[in-house]
Image (cartoon, rainbow, N blue to C red):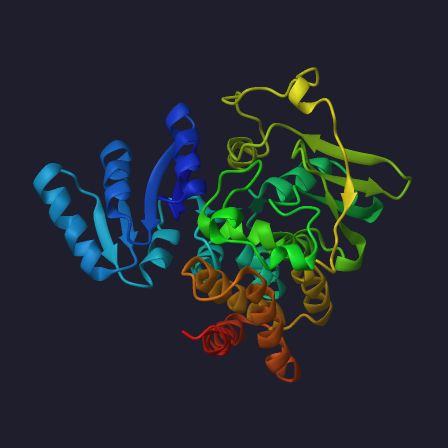
Length: 390
């Protein structure tokens, strides 16, 4: 039985993780849950799973939750923690052996870092942890003897393709992308994109920030950097392959020319299960892949247009430089996406903001550690906030 602390339990990945636990109660126990401020959803999770402790980012909301529990769940012994650092306490609960890192954005890095230090295996759904901190996170995990279990559908696919393979036999990673809602458009077309259009993803149902990242293709840029760290392969040996049907979740090419792929219908339940059951397999709770289904018979591939979707190109450049620049790029992107969702900037301004922010920090690049990337994140946000009029 795995004992889980789920960071970001009220988000999409967190909710689906708890669905896996709900369907397999003999295999999983929930020790801790953390969220931002969605105490309504968190309260329902407490009622069902009765965790040892939960955390809320706001102390005011945490106190409100304590009163809800006292009033409606008399006898419940779940401890409620509050404040910006409280998610790190949930990540380090002594009773948990595995931490699901599903907090969106840079905020997910610090609790994962502390969880690794505490000897927890990490089921990682948060891209930004490795984008900003991959240089030291992977070393910390190796030193602590803990597993990083990739939950992202693409990285989980790559991971499965490499089970039993010698890493020296890996030639290239073929990272698939749906292409988002604006596949085939040119730069001029993108100038007219609205928020509603950008949130209309053709195949995946995700949170707002991740959906916008898919529309700009920044999500693939982040995943290139993430794959570089997870699999110890230079970004120049990682190709972004546009695959609109989202059936092949990624591929690897071996040095003898063989290509291995992982297929399945678009669903995050399966990669969550693969990570949480590793090195075993759980019983399926999703519809199995059917190669004769008319919806999946036609599988196509296209190159990624990095001139139109320039954030992918920037990610390759930033990966080559390393240091704190990936953290700066990520910080600027988070600010720019929030500004777009708030209606303060246009769609194309997201890319412009990120590029201008990275350019301002380029000459000050330095080695990455927990302190330097935290400072870089703050600096990147400050520059991007000025550029977006915050």
